[in-house]
Each structure stands twice: as C-alpha cells, then as structure tokens.
Length: 274
Image (cartoon, rainbow, N blue to C red; front, side):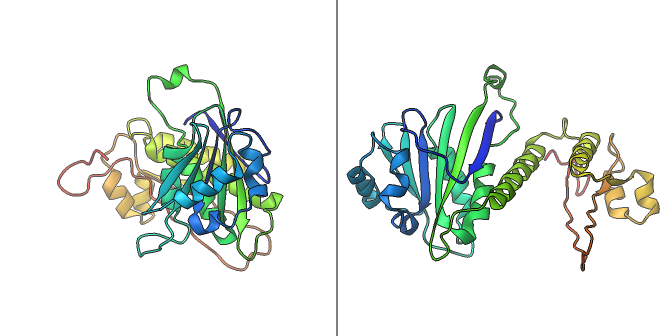
C-alpha cells in the first residue's frame, strides 16, 4: 500500500476490467439508482447489463456483502443500510474494510463510490485510510513500482450534480492528510520519537508557509504545561508542545484543534509499550 498513488477524478474514464480492475461500492439502495449507462464503460465487454442487474439482485448486505462481476477483475460491494449508535449514515468504517478486502489487484485500478453528496467527504477519507503509507514488510523494498488507484464518485439523490474541481481538490488534500496521520500513528515509537514527530510538524508547516511555535523540555514546566512535562520528563527525547497557527485576513472567530501524539507515557504503574 505504501506505493499507491490515490487520485480523485471527476471521471475515471472508460476501460475494460481486464486492463483496469474496478470495484463499485455503495449502499444497495444507492447502487440500484445507478443507470447502466453510468457504469457500463467500466465493465464492458466482460460484464453485461444482465449480469450487473443479477449481481445487484444477489446482494444481501448483513452488514455488508460483495459479488464478483468478472473473474477477479471487477466486483460490486454493498454497505450496510442500517444506522446504529455505533456508525454513521456514510458507513465510512465499512468503506475502508470493503476496499481492503474487495478491490481487485493490479497496478492500475479504479474505485467507483456511489453515495449521496452528504457522504462524499467521509467516504473519501475512508478510502484513503485503506491505503496506508507506512510499511516495514520485507517485500516492500522489492515492490518499488507505483500503483495507481483512481476514485470516481457517482452522486445519487436529490443533489446529484457532478463534483466540481475545487471539491475534488479538497478530497485529495483531505486524503493526503488522512494518510499522513495514519503513517505517523502506524510508525513505532522507536522510530517516531518526539524529535522525529517535530520534524514531521515542521515539514507540514513548511508546506503551508507556517513556522510552528515549539515549547519543549523545562520551558513546558515554566509556562504552566505541567501535565505534558510531568508525563514525558523522564524520556530520552523531551516532551514538546507544537503550535501551528493560521490567521487569515477577515477572520471573525478563533478555532483551536488539539491533538495528542503519544510516543512515551509513564502514567500508571509501568511504562506503556503502545
């Protein structure tokens, strides 16, 4: 997954499944709203209209279900239609699972996400989470070639107009952020210590044109951040608080997002490994 290039496109174009494998995913009610003309270019000649309709008729999500359409080159997957206190209408956590388990292999693949406009952002982030960047598998060094995954949204419901370029750029930026955060979380603490974490923060700041304010070590104690200082003061790499500030002209309110990157913790009776 580390070498996957994820692209969000207004249209992923038409290819037969043998040359570009495809996964079509959505809630069953949404999949049933898609016309054959909208997706036939990604399935023909291997998949006919009759096969597509039969596959939809065979799906029985409980909570999910999938059906191969053409060998191991094309598949359709259905998300849960029910919403409980444990999930959301977008079923984003199931999107990640189905992409990981049902997307056919290959170096050039396509995901067609069928959903309502209100679920586009959550679905795009869930797709991004299915392609982690961090890997320490011994085989990863031998697989240096880039793999491309194109993502196209088919919008159903009342507001079913195509996504605009600015919206696709937003989805792409959000996906990059999700994969960056996942890489930092997935990297073990012996590699992602406080020093390296600050390097990541500086790199993000440089890309955004922001110089982070970093409070570290004894300065934390002096400025009243006793909790951060007390928990991490025994570590080889001192604890730190990093602040990235964006101050656009004309802003009328202040919003603070606080995140915690735990790489060392002495809370409780013993040092925690994770």
